[in-house]
Length: 187
Image (cartoon, rainbow, N blue to C red; front, side, top):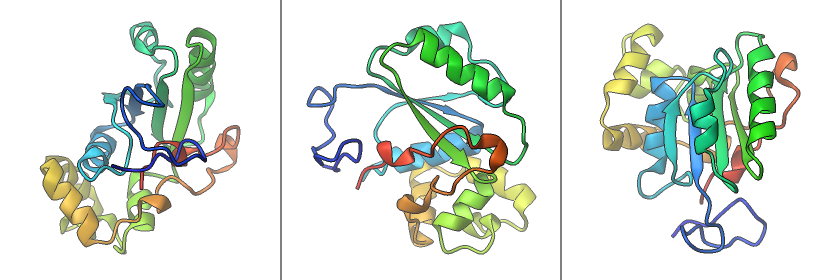
């Protein structure tokens, strides 16, 4: 069973145990959904949770989503930082802090984007190398079409280091939060 990186006690992550929490992943798009699903597959590299495709940098989180985040839940936001617009992201963070008592916010900022995170965390020189795509434009559609197991195998074949995902400090417009992705990673 994976160890929990949420607390320094290194307790095992178990549902119904020490940390009976739910995790929700608000991801920017289909590529992020695919990556999160691949990392949740056994042996898991992320704590389990529900995935909602919703770009928190461009769209306000619907109240229906906010109402579903219970006390002691983790709300994990995965988003790019290549476009320096943060107004809606700040609104979403305020909305969650105001209406979701006891919810822990996790920021997985992709510096600058999904492809950069893939190249930083694997041995590929270009994200297209991961899927053997002819170029970066077709990489995303190729990545999304992979089965979860094949995606995970491709990531491992290219020596994925989960500890290198979502660790780079975001650019200045996004410097109002700390990267805290270590909170949901398992070892």
